[in-house]
Length: 516
Image 1 (tube, helix red, strand yellow):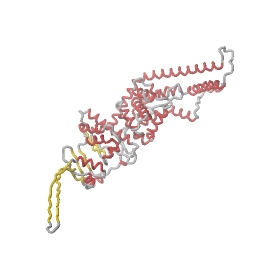
Image 2 (tube, one colour):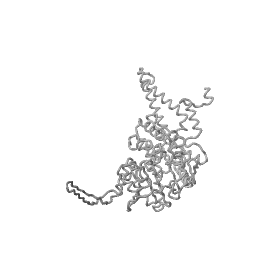
Image 3 (tube, one colour):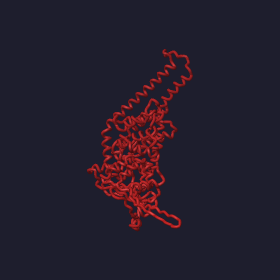
Image 4 (cartoon, one colour):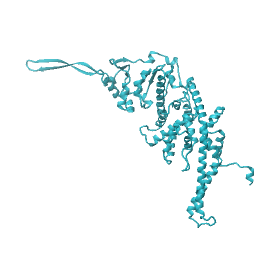
């Protein structure tokens, strides 16, 4: 699969309703995990990813609403607190949202409810699931949608979906692509009186490779009314039964008006078509003959005829059927034995006359996709302008609460130290206390002092600005800035410089202070 020679598709673009975030999250997680084994890790990953998708939908600018943007977000903010009494940076981002915000509610009722000791494992599991999107080619392919899926029902389009033959890495996403396509076609149909302006025909060759659809039989039962026809093509029926089970497989087959048997070597498929072709009444001749030996030889014979039923074609006859024949079963009609129409014989030289290669394909963005993107940009600007005053006020409130908590912690440590080292009489020193207790208190004081020292240089900028980076970004975008979504380039350089100093933070001082 050559992603560079393909039109791009971003699944998050089609999260039009909040509930659709669950569908997308489940598809991403199921693509790398066993969907039949939905244990605590599977469900926790899905819950966290759903929250992140909802956050991206509402809080990211349109160009960052993709898996790369979510990975950047996770890379920027720690998902668990270093101090047991504190909350993580990721928690702060979600808690800065309104209490009824979809992303915050999903996060608080999901990932935030998990125990602190399992949070790292949940996050690592999710990162392992979506680490393919770190690849530059993959992240670019899923960063934007070059065409609108609804356009398939508005105008004539030929869409080719090329599936890797020996690699099932993207099976879950391919399945999600078709699920979103079906949803978009129904949405367009609903806008035009439950009928698509342009009829759509699906030729789903190698259907089992598209993964398992949760509602495929229901789609088949209703799609014809919208002007959608579907050809579901299998190697044999056993493939369908393995994925969907025998009952659902029969339901899927039964929702097709025509069934065509092209031949093959699978006994289950041959027996199915043999049974579906019904019975025929045939005349069977039976007879007997007797002879007697002796002086006068004599013989006699008698014939009788019976009528019995048999399959029009037995499974054995279908398995040995000539290669140029096929069986067609259409509801309300008798079974048809027909000759195959080989297209390369009917239209000789067609492939040479119209050569097509994916390697020559040039990616281009449709007008509808650009229009949808412009709408999202406008909606995002209006959303940020409306939320900015409230977010700014809440940022100040959260900062004040953190300062008060740190001040209280300092007072508690000071009081504890005083209680250990001094008596009630400030001028009288107590008896020496146990060395272990003294070391424990000193350790607590040193840890707090180190936290205060390292936080002093970055607290006013890193904590407040990173917590509400999306607000500042919106202002920079309005003035034509190309700065990063989460923090400015200067902040990036500062972070890199700090990292280079082996974890120590250095703050420059005035020359006068150095002399002192």
